[in-house]
Image (cartoon, rainbow, N blue to C red; front, side):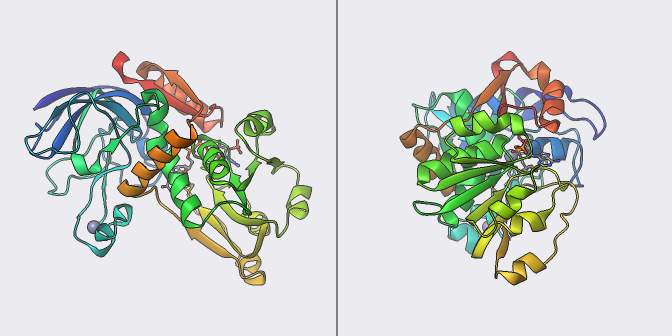
Length: 348
Ligand code: NAP
Ligand code: ZN
Ligand code: ZN
């Protein structure tokens, strides 16, 4: 077994703390990765605090993993020692269902294997994530990080990047389309940059006026404060696509539905701990669509990494040492992150 050092949540109510554990020895198709950087996603907080239910403790969170290949199994063909690689939100899937065969493995009909807070497919062990110094994963669920993207900036792309890239491309954000991103956090700011690179007109719908200048620097065409209720009238029937990245259920969805054109779509990716309250009337009245989307496939994640390298897109990050994790969580909860915390795992 491989000895690993990590940071774990031991229960929903305790601060995270150091944790020593073991990773499996590499099987034929496994890659052993020295983790260099790991992003902090709001989903880590939801799960560490058991806000979605069913959390398994001790839990080493982290699914925005960037590192360097330390060793490979005997039959690995995609990677070699020294390669820059990443791992996102899942490390396996059934590989046989209709969705896996269509390379939509994030929607595996048997459920994908989450990078942490899940069980290996054979049920043998609980998976543990990237708040650690080493990870072992099957090469088919490992991503190649283009050399032009530094590893600290690559990490958040593995979840925040692909979670926005997938719906933006699926719902065809591009030239001539008006796209709005709700919430300028880790996911939201990647949405602004990617939608802009796809050629869309991009607006930010934010409850934090202080983020206005940052949003414009990231390439947004408009910053729309959601505190000013007049804005919901001003931009009624305006957008072709809205992506909701807000981590809280404390938002009045009918206001946002009203911003969509006839037949346009609002996609929720934000996954709050409580249900959203939704009135069907604004959907009914303008034949609008309400949809959801989860992360992205392995194929899309690779496509997104290459797209970001080509368009020079990287996240805005604040690199912290692993012992700052509990402070970072509190700042994320106060929407006080510019715009993704990334832990330097070499300092663990
Ligand atoms: P984050 O960095 O904390 O950003 C969330 C943003 O939501 C905040 O920056 C803030 O933006 C806005 N917000 C927070 N509280 C609010 C409130 N009370 N009222 C209005 N706006 C509020 O979180 P993240 O890492 O981007 O994740 C966002 C959500 O997506 C989380 O729920 C996470 O679990 C989920 N997620 C889903 C997927 C998926 O596959 N579907 C993948 C990853 C994450 P402003 O300050 O600009 O208003
Ligand atoms: Zn995430
Ligand atoms: Zn499957």
